Image (cartoon, rainbow, N blue to C red):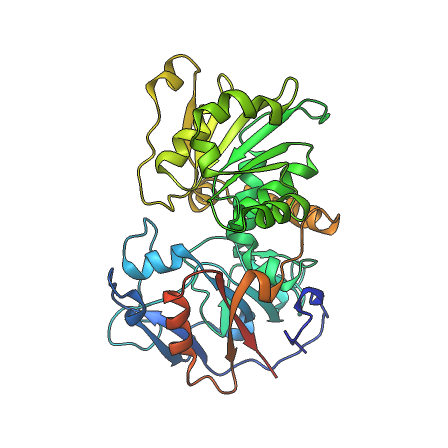
Length: 389
């Protein structure tokens, strides 16, 4: 039976092939019918309902964990470009949707028609977003809507759909890297302490690509930089002050890059001055991908980078990539799992990397308030772990 007591890193998806739970008579989900930009947590409510699907003919899942991502919050606010369709499937007076885009689930029932693809005990994630993951159970009628993630630890599996896939595709899908790893090729990225950035450095290192990570100035800069380099594989960590200093770029950066060092890719999730500073360090005909805007400032790039250096600047969005090519998402997850099993990906630590919220499914009267607190919390990534008896 599932437990997430310490050490959580040792909990892996291991399909049993046998029933571990009876089919539920009802589901309980965190749903919303309206949006609120200023106080989005207040649009949530907990609803218990009888699922419309025929459970005996569906793949039935129970939820193990789900993170609270910025995209989830933006959906509740009503400002995200992709919002699920609201329906009356939840026995509500107004059309509603289940919150959440990402989560880890365990298969508890497989109909005969899907028995060649899944087994009871498999760990799975939704292929696409807008599937409603803040729930205790889910019923899936189309097996192709799920991806198996057996072999990952619980925390990696619960976050691979967004952070893991984003990092993997940013590194692998846009630049033709030297396959031998003998060239001195670099990626530069800001927000170096973010979950995506830590994965980028690990995935890049596995391919022989070097990384220059930019992080905010802080009192314990040396300590954080050392951890990013020694634990997460960043080749070099610099501060935003260094990043923005033109003298540093002319005198110190060449020493860091070494002979024939070239920065071929910039990954921007901050915007503002930070984005223009990492773009300035790119070689000719290089690429900058923007996948976030943490500073809430626009990306402003010098005209000279386009005219004299042939800069290409593009946006990246995992949701849109998956819509265009769902099979690529499956390949991405499989590639990430392979790297993890080969030891290239660091196993997350619950207390260090997350603030966790417990959803005890046998006594969940306060889960709504806990999730609201998680939505409004600052700092570490919030993750909800479901406790099953």
